[in-house]
Length: 462
Image (cartoon, rainbow, N blue to C red):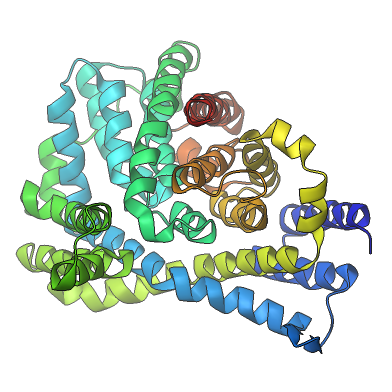
């Protein structure tokens, strides 16, 4: 098959995958794996291993196996530990403690900004939909205290949670994309770039939240007989909140350890000091230490007896994400060996013109079509992986920016096929029609603002 025919086959494969996920409601894992197998057959990948002039070409089954196992080897444990830390923060009330610290830092005069930053902090280790459920009682209490628009607070909270969900590890999507694109061992860089890219996204969504809050009124703003929970009542439900240091430790300690590993590499330390620093700074070990901090957090809040159930529930939650991530790795491996990359390399002027917008557009199409940001991120990263060097994105910083461009696309846009859309609209007491004006539009604003910042950042590096 010629290169152009491969491009056409690839485009058709993506359309079929989107249709299968969004319209036929076939699970993303099965859809991606089936499309990968079909693309491999159409591309002419041999059915069995072949040896020509001493060079071994893997058969299609082995290509699929290598793509699947390679993803598990590089990212599986990291995703599990990151999700486990998030679950511990939920159960112990540490997520609420972190949110309260942000409110005190920002002050009561800017409630939308406070709730947005609160969401951003909490969603670093916690999934955005869980984070919204956790923080919604605080949102309601702040609306009652400050007499701020409930819709503005809902939109700001949703946007804050979403920004770190797609940009900042240890959320599974960014971690998976970072590993797929070759910067998995430099998560500190990805975290730093994600924090910077979050700024234009948060600023744009904050302005939109203030604007739409004056235009749309939710059902809870029309109720005068419902009394929101006070801060004291929320605290009482948790019993005793952990201290600030313990609440921060599962997040901060892994970041510090990864910083130590990066410093050791940059400073070119030698001997045992380098070995220990590099060991502790690898994401798996750093997050393992963060998990140990989480165990101490459980003990301090007298919830250590729940650790088994927390772990079991986390594994059930993470399982589908791991398999979808691995399926994305399979698609990337099939693309890599199909010969399509060589054709694109020889005809790369269009991609070079599109530049950093290519991963954004790709992820935005996948996100809008099938709903899941994680699926959009992992699939887009798998597609981009074979193209990175050809497009000039192979350096660590540009690779990290590519992860961010994928993340920006993967938030554009949230609508009816996205579970987070329904979490936000239902807990925010809004109708689906109001949800399109609020949640859908703020994710569009957020994605475009983030992409503008990414483009400016990339332009400075050229």
